[in-house]
Image (cartoon, rainbow, N blue to C red; front, side, top):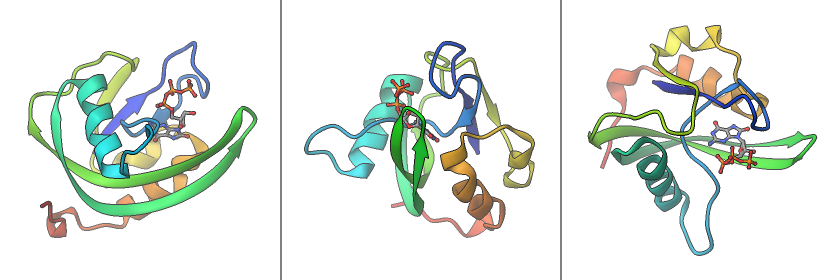
Length: 120
Ligand SMILES: Nc1nc2c([nH]c(=O)n2[C@H]2C[C@H](O)[C@@H](COP(=O)(O)OP(=O)(O)OP(=O)(O)O)O2)c(=O)[nH]1
């Protein structure tokens, strides 16, 4: 699983998150995720199963976080916005300090047998 560390000067500074970003008008979740990963990491992905959607009330606002499995179709993830990225096995993911909204998705991923995942 590709894990990304947020920048020093951002909200949720230095916390870990999944690549992605905010949905723009008229986009589906999957379109937004594909676009954001292309913009941030310069690679093309195929979106798979929806993992979970959570709502978290931060001090700066409320985030509705929809998380999906995805796999890389072309390219190698590049660091553009993040401090660092790490590839971790699902069982290693709890060693990072995740943004609070991500905790339920991280738990589900750690309990998923990744050999059973399918992508369209
Ligand atoms: N991309 C992403 N954002 C997450 C995750 N968990 C989580 O709480 N967030 C929050 C951080 C941001 O407030 C918002 C996503 O914003 P963004 O990715 O488009 O851009 P950003 O961090 O530069 O946003 P911001 O600091 O300007 O609000 O969702 C996650 O796993 N991935």
